[in-house]
Image (cartoon, rainbow, N blue to C red; front, side, top):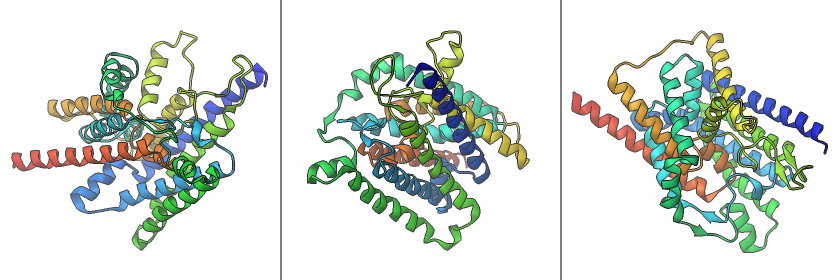
Length: 371
């Protein structure tokens, strides 16, 4: 492939990622898709509607990823989450921090972007602080602390942290077929569980689940198949174009926010290049804005008081640090990571949910105490 063709392909990838992000933002704005909101509804009111939205999205993402692997469209050993090193402590502690942080900050990274599109100035502050904290944990002062402490707790798994790869290696089964069977079994079970509730089967809920899950699959195909170059003409090595990690990536909204700020701050530095993570992040804001304007829900929103500001600042820091430590957020690990059936994603999501419940319990205690 010639340099000109690579440049054109790179531009195509960035535009597709921007479009996927915009569709995500529009759907989330229209359907109120939100992981923190789903946990809050279930915890505070016993309403599992939005949790079923999330479950449907995960089921669709699992089915789609398994289909891509079986069709040879993507290599599961080349995705961001694939590794022979299980950083379980980083995933658990990072997940706990992220889960608590998203409650204090009124939503996770994706919800923050959606809320910005809807007119929330509070979320602009959260985004900036989240991005700074995330970048510090990627390459700065908290990165040094992370590498020197929790990242040292590792379990080596020769057959990898992916369930399908482990099962295939353990029993000598065809990897692609194993991925398909497990994806159908687990993803299909989630879809059946969700759709078994007749009251759930409304157009809005189906749009949220199928739409968001389908966008995760679309991003996997764009990044892992369309953007895959078997031999780069300059390095002569296999590469995945327009990704921050150099591997196949799907939707995620912590590290890409940090890279977005980095790109904006050092725009004149030609070494700072746009990636699909950056453009998809920007796309979410635009998609949410257009949807909010279309349904006339756009409203300016600011902080109510100093305590409100403090909670959001603390929450943003916890999400930035925790999201990087856990290698993803409620979308990055919760949907993109879990769709690959990765063990790290499982413990990260468990940590996120536990942290969210702890945060909601703290808020309930504060309300009871005040009354």
